[in-house]
Amino acid sequence: MRQKWGVLWACLLACVLATYAASTATPTPQIMVSDMSPREGNGGQRQLIFRVGLSKASPNPVQVKVATKNSTARAGQDYIATAQTLTFAPGAAQSSFAVTIIGDTFVEPDETFFIVASAPGFTARYPAATCTLRNDDISPNTTPTPKPTSTPKPTSTPLPTSTPIPIPTSTPVPTATPVPTATPTPTVTPTPPQPTTASVRFVAYADTWADASERWWDIGSKRINGQDTSNVLGDWVASGQSNGKFDYSTRAAGLMLTYQRAPGVPYFVGHISARGLKPNFAYQLKLTGKPVNGPRGTGKTQSYVSATDKTRTGAPDTHIVLGANGEQTPINGDDWTNQQLGYVGRWWNDSNASGNTNAITDSVYAANTTDTIYGYQFVGDFVTDAKGNCETDISGNRSFHITWQDWQNGAKDVFFASFPLSGFMDSSTPPHYYGYGSYAPATGDAAHGENGLSGIGLWYELQAGRPNPVVLPPGTYHCRMLVTEETFHNLYGDTSSPLGGKWKTVMATEDRDITSGEPDAQASNDIVFTIQ
Image 1 (spheres, one colour):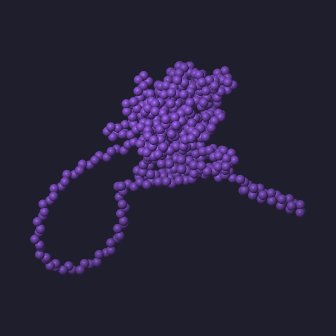
Image 2 (cartoon, rainbow, N blue to C red; image 1 turned 120 degrees about the vertical axis):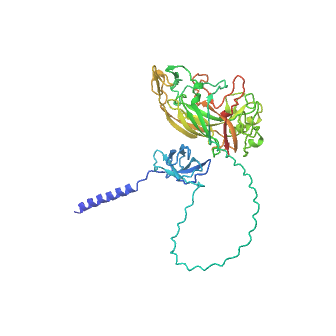
Image 3 (cartoon, rainbow, N blue to C red; image 1 turned 180 degrees about the vertical axis):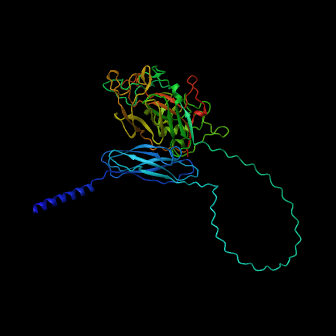
């Protein structure tokens, strides 16, 4: 009997211990994002900073994907849709995520949008956070709610009224002659509000750099076994026939930039819409100044405000450009804008291109009075899909130096995104894939050399010695944007290869007349935005 009771107690104890162990198991670490409830605001844009934390720091780097999601608040109307990958260093447990909200003066209910978050090995509630934009607008025509009228008390029987004693009427005072009414001042018609955004299309750009040439590898290119043909983009397809080239002049109408005229943050904000460009392809976006000086400077007939020592120091100096009649006139060059972009980004000598942008330093620019030296900020890439299309928001809050593929050795400071590669059937007679000849990329078909990668992750290297995040001085900026084919430094040891390319600029928001050398003086082509 004692043996049976011993066995029974042992079983019971084992069950209790198992239950306790299960109840005290280490919980899965959590991603925590703070809720927010800001005022909506009455105009312009401003940033909200969401705190993102890990319930337990990891000994390894952790990449947390965070993104906005519509609820009753709508992206593009109430806030700017944003997605980002936050990298937590080993041991770190705190980071932040910025979202731009858009104020207005409409009377409306409180509106909400969500923040969603995910990371391998971590859990997060869905949504991870809720942002409630509190209405702070009051209608001027709101009728006040009347107070309830109390029920009157019954009226008592009135006492008999005594006969009034008449009072003698006094002699009336003669009426004064009325003063004539002044003619009313005519009402001034209010000026209609200016649009908050502007759009500009790109044109094919005639790059004058002698070494510039088009690139013919897609984003998944990787040199394998010494081959220069890995994921080479084959003949381009036009009307079912391969034509052996890509004509940007016929595709440029499919690329448009929409940007914020007064972004409400100290950097450039916009949106890229692309159609029919090279598929599975990365393009650099460079926000570029318009220098006045030099043989290719834009100030040959007139210019904006010349650069000064004060603006070189970065001191806040509101810069508003006015024409002869006091109007803003974005024509030709603007050295002030050129300087500000160069001091947060890089320089390029267009008069004497050495091929080494690192050789043009701040001191070289400051001492130069004859060459055309452009200041530019590499604000990021956009990547097309299998049909050459892309829709993406862009932000100038970081100044980048170069983009790397994830298999390359380089400074990978900011993760851009992961991209799959796929072909697209453009025509069945003959059976060409769009942009790839007869074979889609990464098929592993050794006979045709299509042995590149089927997917790729891209990273940014930050521009050394420049502020990150970027803060542009207050002022009105007159500039343009260039689109350059991204090469990831993949020249594969042969800079003369017709396949490699060297950062050829293929499109821009404006070009110049190459024959005459005169600048494009169309005001509609300029990018004009104001930092408050």
